[in-house]
Structure formats: structure tokens, C-alpha cells
Image 1 (cartoon, rainbow, N blue to C red):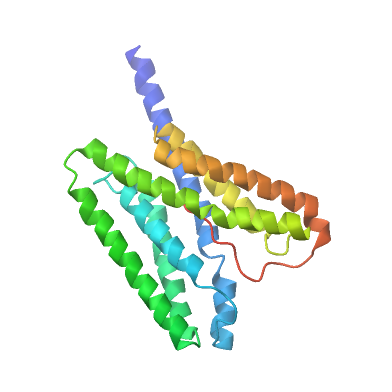
Image 2 (cartoon, rainbow, N blue to C red):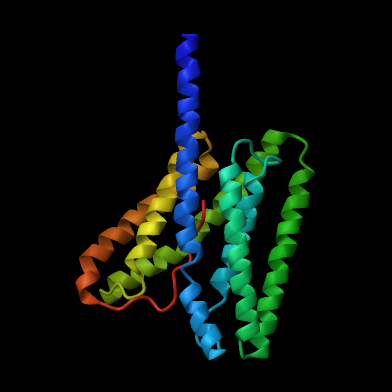
Length: 238
């Protein structure tokens, strides 16, 4: 009995960590997906009709989930912390570039204000959660915020899904983004199951279902449009 437990526990840990590492790798593909958009912005020195709001919101999402993954909030969630640390860095760079190259001073002021609001809200969440003495209650508090933030991020894929069905075109839903979304969400869904963490498995389980829907729609409507999306889809991370 003792030997069986000593063998199964490392196997459980290996499977969990493998899923988390895979999720980090697939998420990186999503982090770099807006690069073509920002190359165009830098080349034209204009943000044109692109919106900077998804990047600001993605930054907030990454920061909250990053905080949830720290040892101060939840145990054994280092891979959630790493993926969202990288994600937050990318979203911050994208937001700064947007502020630099936007032509309208009113829009620039708005973006700077939103960026400051994100860091202000994150600081309130960090300080407020640290006031909760009970570790379990602290984890539940931050976990609920993280879960709500992740689920709300799926509003973007739902909009894209509706757009694809309405236009019968996959122009704004590139295959590699849909596949990366599915693989990343599935990886962290499995990671959350192995880690017995519903705050990770539930939102990513929803992401997995939406990823499957996107892939099914892509293969159904792919012959209606041969163009690629001009603005990469922003998705949630872990």
C-alpha cells in the first residue's frame, strides 16, 4: 500500500506539471498573436481603428490571476503564476505602444487613465486580500475574483462566434488562434483537475468548450472566407 501511494503521487504531480507547462507553451502563442497588429501600428504610426481596451482588460485579468497563483494565496499554483506574469508583461507593452501611437490626445488620456485604474484596482485587491487572516478565506476571495475575471474574458470569443455565424465567414477567427485557445484552455483545465482547484478548472473548462465551438465553426465556414483576421483575438490565460 505504501509503495503504491509513493508511486502514484509523483505520477499525479508529473501529469499536473506537464499540463501546466503545456498550458504555458500554448499561451505564449496567444501572447505574441497581436504582434502583427502592432507592427502595422508602428509602421503607420497610427492606431487607426484598432481598440486598446482589450489589452488593458487582459492586463487586469492577468494581474488578478497572477496574484491568485502566488504562494501567498494558493499553494502549488506556480505555473499559473508564471503564465500570467508573462501575459501581464506582454499586455503592458501592448498598452504602452497603443498609448504612444494613438493620434487623439483624448483617447491617449483615456488609455493612461484606464492603465492607472488597473494598477490601482490591483493594488486594492492585493492589500485587501492580505488583510484576510484565514488562508482558506483569502484563497476563496481572490479565487472568486480570478474566476469571474477569466469567465468574463470569454465575452470576446462569444462575440467572435456570433460574428462568424452572422457573416458566415472566419475572417476574424484565424485557425491558429482558435486552436491555441482550445489547447491552452484544455491544458489548464486538466491542470486544475489534477490540482483539485475549481478556480482554475471551471473557467478553463468553459474555455475548452468555447474552443471546440470555434474549431467546429472554423471548419464549417472556412470555405466562405480566405482572409486572415486583421486584429488578433484577445483571450484569457489560465
